[in-house]
Amino acid sequence: MKKVADPASRLVRLEDVLGCPDCHGPLSDSLECPGCGVSGSRNGAQLKFAGFSDTELRQDPLNHVKESVKQRFGSLYPLAISLLSPVYMSGSVRSFLRGFDLDRELVADLGCGTQRYDPRMLCVDGGSYANVDLIADLSRLPLRDGVLSGITSIAVLEHVPDPDAHIAEMWRVLAPGGRLFCYMPFIVPFHASPDDYQRYTKVGLERRFQRFEVLDVRVGCGPTSGLLWVLQEWLALALSFGSERLYRAFVPLMWLLSPLKILDVVMARHPAASVIASGFVIEARKPAVRESRLLA
Image (tube, rainbow, N blue to C red; front, side, top):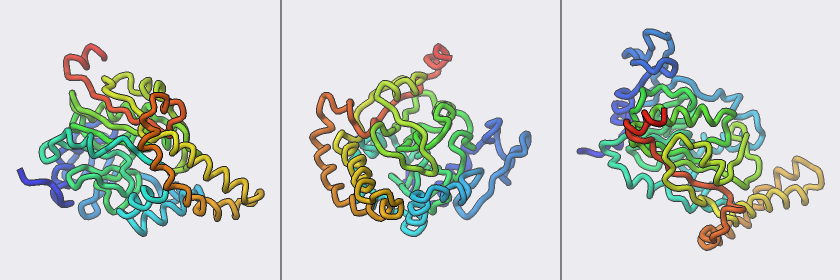
């Protein structure tokens, strides 16, 4: 089968699985639910049903800057973050994706930002970035039940006030036997996108996904990453002597320490790394039909 790599082909696949975000029933050709009246819109190969307003995305001063950079540099933004940020992520999304036949199986990145891990993936976000296929509220996905084989969610759930609603949607749209890969931070400073609400320990993350069959929970970003990010913020605070303007000027200068994150290649493997890890990865599976009935 030919690889699905172009926006038009992804749109065809997306339209095949669309559903009302409220009743989850089929939509008309005009993207309207006959029963609920909920509707979406098309903009080229991009579909929109909800999403963040520009005001929401820019209400936090730092996130205002981040949004401007995302809109200007698009797909280069994730590369810049991987180079400049203090976080070294050892949990590999691409290794997870190799477990799928992406030509036949539909895998969605929920909260993708400006990242696209594979041209055959479905990119879903609340922001209207150029790479996003479906702009939507991640707690009310305009997808029918059980249409996804896989889900990735990278550093998203800390930014929502209702993570259980988002996890419930993951369960709903995953097919029986479908798998997910989720990264959540543990020791990191406040960072709005567009807001910031919570952190998780290893056991806390397991608890959140207890409805699923948990396959693995491991350190995703190691102790050095957590230490560096906190240290960078501390140094910016200490050197700014109470001035918020100086603090915001110093934060980028502290990125000079970020290359030290490479120490996590070793530190993240320490048996006690989870005590002060920067974040955790969980891989989980929605049980097959018979197992799902037993859990219901």
